[in-house]
Image (cartoon, rainbow, N blue to C red; front, top):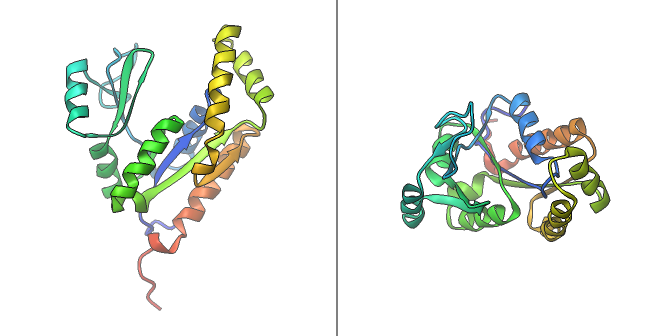
Length: 207
């Protein structure tokens, strides 16, 4: 287990669509009670069973735009006509409470967070970025087909986008080549344990 005295982490995980990041995030949250997800704002309507403030902060378009113009978001994106954004106050509030914060974002969102962290020492100290990808495009294509949720044309489009996303892997702190759910999780936990032992995250040593 990581040192509880270590300063908290902002864990950013990105992967191409179908790369397994949602499964990895769910496994990480179950394995480490000290890790919490940042609740994202969205303009899409709640789905059955979703709760405001737990699953998302559900905002109307005008409220979202107001927060965007005020610079409240650490990162934001528009997906299928709906806006999504991570509030800086949400992330910093949880970090200051001593919790490790998990963000599941695309590569563009990760790039935005890295840029914002360069301007903010608190975020920079906490940030750890991880890119997760299957070993080959063929493996990713097989995973997308196995999901059974997309047409062949959509799968090809996702693969085209995935190639562009995978090309960004060098900008992340860590790369996990996805093998299996359990192996991916063990590698992620090893990354967190190592980051918790970095000297700049530990209190002064009294000897």
